[in-house]
Length: 381
Image 1 (cartoon, rainbow, N blue to C red):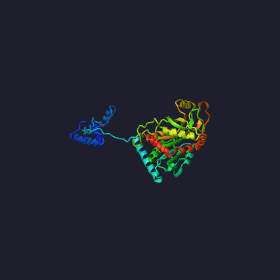
Image 2: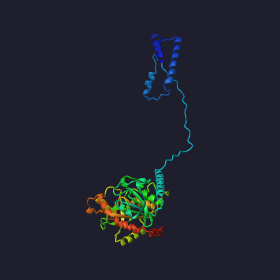
Image 3: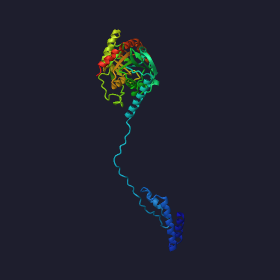
Image 4: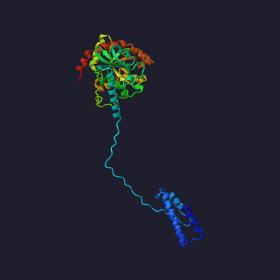
Protein backbone atom coordinates (compact mmCIF):
# COMPACT_ATOMS: atom_id res chain seq x y z
CA UNK A 1 0.00 0.00 0.00
CA UNK A 2 2.70 2.40 0.90
CA UNK A 3 4.50 1.86 -2.39
CA UNK A 4 1.32 2.75 -4.31
CA UNK A 5 0.89 5.94 -2.35
CA UNK A 6 4.48 6.90 -2.98
CA UNK A 7 4.10 6.34 -6.74
CA UNK A 8 0.89 8.35 -6.74
CA UNK A 9 2.44 11.20 -4.85
CA UNK A 10 5.49 11.31 -7.14
CA UNK A 11 3.28 11.46 -10.25
CA UNK A 12 1.13 14.22 -8.73
CA UNK A 13 4.23 16.18 -7.80
CA UNK A 14 5.87 16.11 -11.21
CA UNK A 15 2.85 16.17 -13.57
CA UNK A 16 0.31 18.41 -11.94
CA UNK A 17 0.81 20.01 -8.59
CA UNK A 18 -2.81 21.15 -8.44
CA UNK A 19 -4.76 17.96 -7.89
CA UNK A 20 -8.42 17.68 -8.69
CA UNK A 21 -10.83 17.03 -5.81
CA UNK A 22 -11.32 13.45 -6.93
CA UNK A 23 -7.56 12.87 -7.11
CA UNK A 24 -7.08 14.43 -3.66
CA UNK A 25 -9.75 12.13 -2.20
CA UNK A 26 -8.00 9.19 -3.78
CA UNK A 27 -4.71 10.39 -2.31
CA UNK A 28 -6.23 10.69 1.19
CA UNK A 29 -7.66 7.19 0.86
CA UNK A 30 -4.25 5.75 0.04
CA UNK A 31 -2.62 7.73 2.88
CA UNK A 32 -5.21 6.37 5.32
CA UNK A 33 -4.34 2.86 4.25
CA UNK A 34 -0.65 3.65 4.75
CA UNK A 35 -1.29 5.02 8.26
CA UNK A 36 -3.29 1.94 9.18
CA UNK A 37 -0.54 -0.37 7.98
CA UNK A 38 2.05 1.75 9.76
CA UNK A 39 0.23 1.51 13.12
CA UNK A 40 0.17 -2.27 12.86
CA UNK A 41 3.85 -2.68 12.14
CA UNK A 42 5.39 0.14 14.18
CA UNK A 43 5.58 0.72 17.95
CA UNK A 44 3.13 3.57 18.68
CA UNK A 45 5.61 5.07 21.14
CA UNK A 46 9.09 4.37 19.76
CA UNK A 47 11.92 4.74 22.25
CA UNK A 48 14.48 6.77 20.38
CA UNK A 49 17.21 9.10 21.44
CA UNK A 50 17.29 12.73 20.48
CA UNK A 51 19.84 12.15 17.69
CA UNK A 52 17.80 9.37 16.04
CA UNK A 53 14.42 11.16 16.10
CA UNK A 54 15.08 13.56 13.12
CA UNK A 55 16.39 10.71 10.97
CA UNK A 56 13.29 8.61 11.62
CA UNK A 57 11.03 11.59 10.99
CA UNK A 58 12.76 12.22 7.64
CA UNK A 59 12.28 8.57 6.66
CA UNK A 60 8.52 8.94 7.13
CA UNK A 61 8.24 11.95 4.79
CA UNK A 62 6.87 11.31 1.33
CA UNK A 63 7.67 13.15 -1.88
CA UNK A 64 5.48 16.15 -2.60
CA UNK A 65 5.75 17.52 0.90
CA UNK A 66 3.54 14.77 2.25
CA UNK A 67 4.35 13.03 5.54
CA UNK A 68 2.93 10.21 7.61
CA UNK A 69 2.01 11.22 11.14
CA UNK A 70 1.01 8.22 13.24
CA UNK A 71 -1.78 8.90 15.65
CA UNK A 72 -1.00 8.94 19.31
CA UNK A 73 -2.44 6.20 21.40
CA UNK A 74 -3.29 6.52 25.06
CA UNK A 75 -1.74 3.57 26.82
CA UNK A 76 -3.47 1.99 29.79
CA UNK A 77 -1.47 2.77 32.91
CA UNK A 78 -1.11 -0.18 35.24
CA UNK A 79 -0.37 0.66 38.85
CA UNK A 80 1.14 -2.06 41.07
CA UNK A 81 -0.94 -3.23 43.98
CA UNK A 82 0.20 -2.16 47.39
CA UNK A 83 1.71 -4.97 49.44
CA UNK A 84 -0.17 -5.90 52.58
CA UNK A 85 3.04 -6.11 54.57
CA UNK A 86 6.73 -6.94 54.34
CA UNK A 87 7.31 -10.48 53.19
CA UNK A 88 9.81 -12.42 55.30
CA UNK A 89 11.73 -15.09 53.43
CA UNK A 90 13.29 -17.58 55.81
CA UNK A 91 16.19 -19.68 54.57
CA UNK A 92 17.50 -22.64 56.56
CA UNK A 93 20.63 -21.87 58.58
CA UNK A 94 23.67 -23.98 57.60
CA UNK A 95 24.21 -24.90 61.26
CA UNK A 96 20.63 -26.23 61.46
CA UNK A 97 21.19 -28.47 58.47
CA UNK A 98 24.49 -29.71 59.93
CA UNK A 99 22.91 -30.37 63.33
CA UNK A 100 20.04 -32.35 61.82
CA UNK A 101 22.49 -34.33 59.71
CA UNK A 102 24.70 -35.21 62.70
CA UNK A 103 21.72 -36.15 64.88
CA UNK A 104 20.30 -38.41 62.18
CA UNK A 105 23.67 -40.10 61.66
CA UNK A 106 24.11 -40.59 65.41
CA UNK A 107 20.67 -42.18 65.76
CA UNK A 108 21.26 -44.44 62.76
CA UNK A 109 24.73 -45.52 63.96
CA UNK A 110 23.47 -46.20 67.50
CA UNK A 111 20.62 -48.36 66.19
CA UNK A 112 23.01 -50.22 63.91
CA UNK A 113 25.43 -51.08 66.75
CA UNK A 114 22.76 -51.88 69.34
CA UNK A 115 21.17 -54.32 66.92
CA UNK A 116 24.47 -56.21 66.49
CA UNK A 117 25.84 -55.81 70.04
CA UNK A 118 22.93 -55.23 72.44
CA UNK A 119 25.03 -54.53 75.56
CA UNK A 120 25.31 -51.04 77.03
CA UNK A 121 28.99 -49.98 77.06
CA UNK A 122 30.44 -48.37 80.17
CA UNK A 123 33.89 -47.38 78.86
CA UNK A 124 35.02 -46.15 75.46
CA UNK A 125 38.59 -46.09 74.18
CA UNK A 126 40.20 -44.37 71.18
CA UNK A 127 43.62 -45.69 70.16
CA UNK A 128 46.03 -43.51 68.19
CA UNK A 129 49.09 -44.03 66.02
CA UNK A 130 50.88 -47.32 66.65
CA UNK A 131 48.82 -48.10 69.76
CA UNK A 132 46.25 -50.46 68.27
CA UNK A 133 47.70 -53.43 70.17
CA UNK A 134 46.24 -52.08 73.41
CA UNK A 135 43.00 -53.68 72.20
CA UNK A 136 44.39 -57.05 73.24
CA UNK A 137 43.27 -56.27 76.81
CA UNK A 138 39.65 -56.81 75.78
CA UNK A 139 37.72 -60.06 75.41
CA UNK A 140 36.13 -59.37 72.03
CA UNK A 141 32.47 -60.16 71.45
CA UNK A 142 31.93 -58.27 68.20
CA UNK A 143 34.17 -56.48 65.69
CA UNK A 144 33.30 -54.12 62.88
CA UNK A 145 35.24 -52.07 60.37
CA UNK A 146 34.64 -48.32 60.41
CA UNK A 147 33.29 -48.55 56.85
CA UNK A 148 30.44 -50.76 58.10
CA UNK A 149 29.21 -48.41 60.83
CA UNK A 150 27.02 -45.51 59.62
CA UNK A 151 28.72 -42.17 60.19
CA UNK A 152 32.23 -43.51 60.86
CA UNK A 153 34.93 -42.69 58.32
CA UNK A 154 37.83 -45.12 57.73
CA UNK A 155 41.18 -43.50 58.64
CA UNK A 156 43.88 -43.12 56.01
CA UNK A 157 46.84 -42.37 58.29
CA UNK A 158 49.47 -45.05 58.79
CA UNK A 159 49.16 -46.93 62.09
CA UNK A 160 45.36 -46.57 62.31
CA UNK A 161 43.53 -49.81 61.58
CA UNK A 162 40.00 -48.43 61.49
CA UNK A 163 38.24 -51.19 63.42
CA UNK A 164 35.71 -51.11 66.25
CA UNK A 165 35.99 -53.84 68.90
CA UNK A 166 33.22 -54.53 71.44
CA UNK A 167 33.71 -56.72 74.49
CA UNK A 168 34.61 -56.95 78.18
CA UNK A 169 37.58 -55.67 80.19
CA UNK A 170 37.46 -56.86 83.82
CA UNK A 171 33.65 -57.23 83.69
CA UNK A 172 33.26 -53.72 82.22
CA UNK A 173 31.51 -53.44 78.87
CA UNK A 174 33.96 -51.61 76.61
CA UNK A 175 34.10 -50.32 73.05
CA UNK A 176 37.55 -49.78 71.56
CA UNK A 177 38.18 -47.82 68.39
CA UNK A 178 41.42 -48.90 66.79
CA UNK A 179 42.34 -45.73 64.95
CA UNK A 180 40.89 -42.29 64.41
CA UNK A 181 40.53 -39.68 61.67
CA UNK A 182 42.38 -36.36 61.76
CA UNK A 183 41.80 -32.86 60.47
CA UNK A 184 44.84 -33.14 58.22
CA UNK A 185 43.15 -35.99 56.33
CA UNK A 186 40.68 -33.44 54.98
CA UNK A 187 37.72 -34.34 57.18
CA UNK A 188 35.52 -31.66 58.77
CA UNK A 189 36.00 -31.26 62.50
CA UNK A 190 32.58 -32.69 63.39
CA UNK A 191 33.59 -35.91 61.63
CA UNK A 192 36.63 -36.15 63.91
CA UNK A 193 34.42 -35.77 67.01
CA UNK A 194 31.66 -38.08 65.78
CA UNK A 195 33.01 -41.22 67.56
CA UNK A 196 32.88 -39.40 70.91
CA UNK A 197 29.23 -38.39 70.45
CA UNK A 198 28.43 -41.94 69.37
CA UNK A 199 30.10 -43.49 72.43
CA UNK A 200 28.18 -41.18 74.72
CA UNK A 201 24.88 -41.96 73.01
CA UNK A 202 25.54 -45.68 73.40
CA UNK A 203 25.91 -45.14 77.17
CA UNK A 204 29.65 -44.79 77.87
CA UNK A 205 30.48 -43.17 81.20
CA UNK A 206 34.25 -42.77 80.71
CA UNK A 207 36.45 -42.10 77.70
CA UNK A 208 40.11 -43.15 77.45
CA UNK A 209 42.20 -41.55 74.69
CA UNK A 210 45.65 -42.70 73.58
CA UNK A 211 47.90 -40.87 71.11
CA UNK A 212 51.46 -40.30 69.97
CA UNK A 213 53.10 -36.93 70.61
CA UNK A 214 56.34 -35.05 70.31
CA UNK A 215 58.21 -34.18 73.50
CA UNK A 216 58.79 -30.48 74.16
CA UNK A 217 59.78 -30.74 77.80
CA UNK A 218 63.51 -31.59 77.98
CA UNK A 219 62.86 -33.71 81.09
CA UNK A 220 60.92 -36.22 78.97
CA UNK A 221 62.51 -38.90 76.84
CA UNK A 222 61.52 -40.92 73.80
CA UNK A 223 59.09 -43.76 74.51
CA UNK A 224 57.87 -42.27 77.80
CA UNK A 225 54.16 -42.21 78.65
CA UNK A 226 52.50 -39.05 80.00
CA UNK A 227 49.01 -38.39 81.30
CA UNK A 228 47.37 -35.19 80.06
CA UNK A 229 46.03 -32.64 82.51
CA UNK A 230 45.34 -29.74 80.11
CA UNK A 231 45.69 -28.74 76.48
CA UNK A 232 46.22 -25.74 74.19
CA UNK A 233 44.01 -25.69 71.09
CA UNK A 234 46.05 -24.34 68.18
CA UNK A 235 44.07 -26.16 65.47
CA UNK A 236 42.08 -23.07 64.59
CA UNK A 237 38.69 -24.76 64.96
CA UNK A 238 36.37 -26.57 67.35
CA UNK A 239 33.88 -29.42 66.84
CA UNK A 240 31.22 -27.26 68.49
CA UNK A 241 31.15 -24.62 65.74
CA UNK A 242 27.60 -24.80 64.41
CA UNK A 243 26.80 -27.71 66.75
CA UNK A 244 26.64 -26.01 70.16
CA UNK A 245 22.99 -26.94 70.63
CA UNK A 246 21.14 -28.43 73.57
CA UNK A 247 20.10 -31.42 71.44
CA UNK A 248 23.75 -32.54 71.40
CA UNK A 249 24.90 -31.36 74.82
CA UNK A 250 25.95 -28.23 76.63
CA UNK A 251 25.76 -25.06 74.58
CA UNK A 252 28.80 -23.49 76.29
CA UNK A 253 30.72 -26.36 77.91
CA UNK A 254 33.10 -25.61 80.76
CA UNK A 255 36.76 -26.45 80.04
CA UNK A 256 38.22 -25.85 83.50
CA UNK A 257 38.55 -29.64 83.99
CA UNK A 258 38.79 -31.16 80.51
CA UNK A 259 40.67 -34.16 81.89
CA UNK A 260 39.15 -35.99 84.87
CA UNK A 261 41.38 -35.08 87.90
CA UNK A 262 40.44 -38.06 90.13
CA UNK A 263 41.17 -40.39 87.23
CA UNK A 264 44.55 -38.75 86.64
CA UNK A 265 45.49 -39.26 90.29
CA UNK A 266 44.32 -42.89 90.19
CA UNK A 267 46.29 -43.58 86.99
CA UNK A 268 49.49 -42.13 88.48
CA UNK A 269 49.06 -44.20 91.62
CA UNK A 270 48.58 -47.41 89.62
CA UNK A 271 51.56 -46.51 87.39
CA UNK A 272 53.80 -46.26 90.42
CA UNK A 273 52.79 -49.80 91.38
CA UNK A 274 53.94 -50.92 87.92
CA UNK A 275 57.17 -48.91 88.26
CA UNK A 276 56.00 -46.87 85.28
CA UNK A 277 56.81 -43.13 85.29
CA UNK A 278 53.64 -41.23 84.40
CA UNK A 279 54.30 -37.47 84.56
CA UNK A 280 51.51 -34.96 83.99
CA UNK A 281 51.73 -32.95 80.78
CA UNK A 282 50.05 -30.14 78.84
CA UNK A 283 49.19 -31.08 75.24
CA UNK A 284 49.42 -28.60 72.32
CA UNK A 285 47.07 -29.53 69.49
CA UNK A 286 48.23 -28.64 65.96
CA UNK A 287 46.40 -29.20 62.67
CA UNK A 288 49.30 -30.92 60.84
CA UNK A 289 50.22 -32.94 58.90
CA UNK A 290 53.66 -31.34 58.77
CA UNK A 291 55.89 -31.43 61.81
CA UNK A 292 56.74 -28.11 63.43
CA UNK A 293 59.74 -25.86 62.88
CA UNK A 294 62.38 -24.96 65.46
CA UNK A 295 60.75 -21.58 66.06
CA UNK A 296 57.36 -23.21 66.54
CA UNK A 297 58.80 -25.66 69.08
CA UNK A 298 60.29 -22.75 71.02
CA UNK A 299 56.97 -20.94 70.91
CA UNK A 300 55.00 -23.98 72.11
CA UNK A 301 57.39 -24.56 74.98
CA UNK A 302 57.24 -20.94 76.09
CA UNK A 303 53.42 -20.94 76.23
CA UNK A 304 53.44 -23.93 78.53
CA UNK A 305 53.16 -27.06 76.34
CA UNK A 306 55.00 -30.25 77.33
CA UNK A 307 54.01 -32.35 74.30
CA UNK A 308 52.61 -31.59 70.86
CA UNK A 309 50.37 -33.64 68.60
CA UNK A 310 47.71 -33.56 65.87
CA UNK A 311 44.72 -35.18 67.59
CA UNK A 312 43.01 -35.51 71.00
CA UNK A 313 41.86 -31.88 71.33
CA UNK A 314 38.67 -32.10 69.18
CA UNK A 315 37.64 -35.32 70.93
CA UNK A 316 38.18 -33.85 74.40
CA UNK A 317 36.13 -30.76 73.52
CA UNK A 318 33.31 -32.95 72.21
CA UNK A 319 33.45 -35.05 75.40
CA UNK A 320 33.17 -31.90 77.52
CA UNK A 321 30.08 -30.92 75.55
CA UNK A 322 28.26 -34.18 76.32
CA UNK A 323 29.56 -34.44 79.90
CA UNK A 324 31.83 -37.43 79.35
CA UNK A 325 34.88 -37.65 81.68
CA UNK A 326 38.18 -38.12 79.85
CA UNK A 327 41.48 -39.78 80.69
CA UNK A 328 44.11 -39.15 78.02
CA UNK A 329 47.57 -40.67 77.65
CA UNK A 330 50.30 -39.76 75.16
CA UNK A 331 53.45 -41.62 74.21
CA UNK A 332 56.47 -39.49 73.34
CA UNK A 333 57.38 -40.68 69.85
CA UNK A 334 60.18 -38.16 69.28
CA UNK A 335 61.90 -35.33 71.10
CA UNK A 336 61.28 -31.83 69.75
CA UNK A 337 64.19 -29.88 71.20
CA UNK A 338 64.94 -26.88 68.94
CA UNK A 339 68.67 -26.83 69.69
CA UNK A 340 69.12 -30.55 69.09
CA UNK A 341 66.61 -31.20 66.31
CA UNK A 342 67.28 -33.86 63.72
CA UNK A 343 65.35 -35.22 60.76
CA UNK A 344 62.26 -37.21 61.75
CA UNK A 345 60.00 -39.70 59.95
CA UNK A 346 56.58 -41.06 60.78
CA UNK A 347 57.94 -44.60 60.81
CA UNK A 348 60.36 -43.68 63.60
CA UNK A 349 57.48 -42.24 65.66
CA UNK A 350 55.41 -45.41 65.19
CA UNK A 351 58.29 -47.61 66.36
CA UNK A 352 58.82 -45.50 69.47
CA UNK A 353 55.13 -45.59 70.42
CA UNK A 354 54.88 -49.35 69.92
CA UNK A 355 57.55 -49.80 72.60
CA UNK A 356 55.11 -48.51 75.22
CA UNK A 357 52.21 -50.74 74.15
CA UNK A 358 52.81 -53.50 76.73
CA UNK A 359 53.11 -51.05 79.65
CA UNK A 360 49.99 -49.16 78.64
CA UNK A 361 48.03 -52.38 78.20
CA UNK A 362 48.85 -53.47 81.73
CA UNK A 363 47.95 -50.04 83.06
CA UNK A 364 44.55 -50.23 81.34
CA UNK A 365 43.85 -53.65 82.84
CA UNK A 366 44.50 -52.31 86.33
CA UNK A 367 42.60 -49.11 85.71
CA UNK A 368 39.35 -50.53 84.31
CA UNK A 369 37.78 -52.08 87.39
CA UNK A 370 34.37 -51.70 89.06
CA UNK A 371 36.04 -49.39 91.60
CA UNK A 372 36.62 -46.92 88.76
CA UNK A 373 32.88 -46.61 88.21
CA UNK A 374 32.36 -46.03 91.92
CA UNK A 375 34.88 -43.19 91.75
CA UNK A 376 32.91 -41.76 88.84
CA UNK A 377 29.73 -41.79 90.90
CA UNK A 378 31.44 -40.05 93.82
CA UNK A 379 32.84 -37.31 91.60
CA UNK A 380 29.59 -36.64 89.78
CA UNK A 381 28.61 -32.96 90.27
